Image (cartoon, rainbow, N blue to C red; front, side):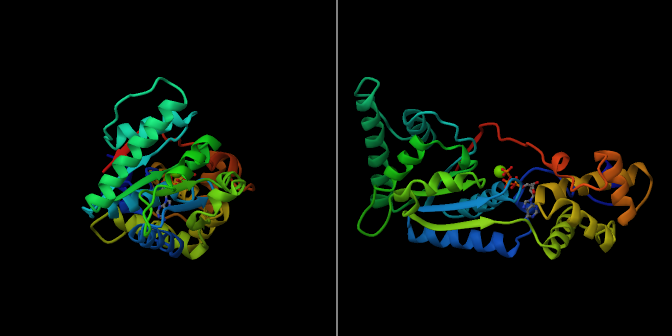
Length: 300
Ligand SMILES: Nc1ncnc2c1ncn2[C@@H]1O[C@H](COP(=O)(O)OP(=O)(O)OP(=O)(O)O)[C@@H](O)[C@H]1O
Ligand SMILES: [Mg+2]
């Protein structure tokens, strides 16, 4: 039997996938989401969400997509792994993923880039001005964008009418994105909403753990964690959602293995000792995972 079923859960409460159903909307996540939706409605162009590793950016983007899917006037594409080297690669990917008609006129080189940009602009005019749609490009892992692509995005934001931008760009990236955009004054200037996600507070850590357990069962939530266990989880993870998830997952598994039902502080410390061999440390090295995206993309 799956370990979580032994404890009374229908689903795994602490899976590491960025499932929006399991997202506890903290105040910060809510502010970010609401503001992005407002800016998209106003079609102001460029929104940037920063956040340390594992603070919930991808999960937030999934929640955003969930919202956008309900709106028929929105056409969006999400790039999960934007490691394009050149502007041509980036533009070609945009053209392919939005199904933009494109005829090759020029040979490779400057002429080709102009053709690609032209095709994108024509498409945007058609969709936004004539079909009254909002076109949104969401880029996760935006810290991987190089200067050429950031410049290409800046040029996208020059496509505009008197009232609005023809394309809306939402970037979500780790903190190393910040110096990249900060060094491009004319990019920074164009950001209509920027926001940074931080690790959770103790209250939000507790709320997130409880929320995820609630989502994982239709029955009353089994009492798995004593408050002191959650305090320990918070201390050792620093409130980083991915670390919280991984540690809680480990605790649940060990409860099953040890044939116990409730984790207290000592149990959590024991898990840290056994799994990570680092009772006294912050657990950073081990709990820090490198769950990387694999270049898939979503279109809606
Ligand atoms: N608000 C939240 N409520 C519940 N779970 C969350 C929340 N935020 C993040 N998580 C969980 O934490 C883990 C990491 O989240 P996510 O992948 O979104 O972080 P990230 O900021 O995109 O990380 P990275 O910088 O590595 O790309 C996921 O398992 C996700 O489900
Ligand atoms: Mg991510």
